[in-house]
Every structure is written in C-alpha cells, then in structure tokens.
Image 1 (tube, helix red, strand yellow):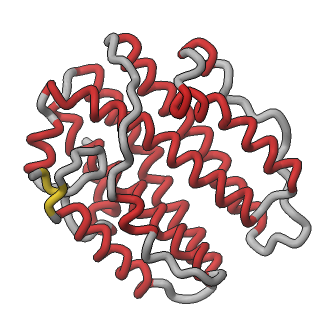
Image 2 (spheres, helix red, strand yellow):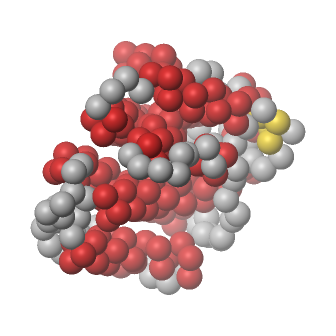
Length: 251
C-alpha cells in the first residue's frame, strides 16, 4: 500500500536491505537492541540537522535556543536524566530562529531542518514511549559503523563539505525509510503501524536533504551522489559483526 511512496527511495538507493538483516531484526531477542538503536538514531538525526543550521545559517542567539531545545533529549541519552513525562513537554522551540545576516544558505535550510528536528524529536518520544510501555529499559550502546563510514569521505573544504554532508543525510534518511518498510510486516501490530506511520516523513526528509545539496551546489551533483551511493551500498551489503538499525550483513 506504500509502494508508490517507496519507489523513488528504492530508485535512489543502490541496494536493498539484505534478507539476512531482516531475518535477524525480526527475532524477538533483538527487539530491545533495535528499538534502543532506533531511539538513538532519531536523536542523531536531530543533532545533524541542528549542527547544519547552527554552523551555516543562524545567529548566535538562535544557535543557543536550538541547543536548549535539544538538551533534554541529549541528557536522557547520554546521562539517563529525565523521564517520558518530562520529555513530552520538551519538544518546543523557545524563540524564532533568525538567519545570520551573512548566511548565503538562507531561510530554506532553516525551514527544512527545523521541521526535520521537530519530527525526529517526536519520533524519539514515540520510540521511547513504546519502550516504556513494554518495560524495555534504555541502556547505552556503542555507535555502529554506518554514518561514520560515510562521513569519513566528506570533503574538507566549503561548500563541498556542506554538499557532501547533505548528500550523506539524504542516504541515511532514505535507508531508514527503506528499513522501516522492510521490517514492518514482520513485527507485531503496534510496531507495524508505527513503522508504516514513519514512512511519509522519512521519505520527505531524504528529498529535503538532496534538494538542499543541489541548491547549495548550484551545479550538477550526480557524480557525488553516485559516489556516496556506492559507499552506502557497500556498508549495507558487506559483513558487519555489530548488529544495529543501519548495520550491514550480519555475520
């Protein structure tokens, strides 16, 4: 029923999630790890979008407001401080976000990334709510290789650094969406409905990142998109001993 939504994503990605990953992900004993990593991934997605806004687009006061907005969620992940009830009240930005006068990237980056942050934080809360209702405790886990494996290829001079990071963001969001769709049919009814509900926003997230990369570049970026597509596909299809939401072929 969501094949039309997934068609451009499947065309964008250079490979499908291996069936071996699905087989491992659907095992009940891996649910806690999967949900925990998903929770952390939602925060990381919000942090990435916030870093982009603060580095490239907004004034100092707006940057501070953005940090304060995300702080309760970071405190929960890194220090296990806070509760579900407290986080329910935290997804509110305290002030308007103002572009820097010398920013060349404009309001479009701010608008797209602020909306993305709001949605990722909401998804974070939804995952944590599911974990809490199922008495699944949150425990710290190590980061997988996936995002780092792409980011190490990002160029170190502007505007190519920003363009590359936006392209990486597009692939991460697209892969998340593809995995939600692959995994949903194998989960219980609540989780099935939840992951299907995430598809629409995640599909738009990858498109927003890609559109911003094209806008910043002001030129054809097909070759660079293909470059990161090859790297992403290698990370997804190669052997990976560390099972995570974005991990490769389980060993």
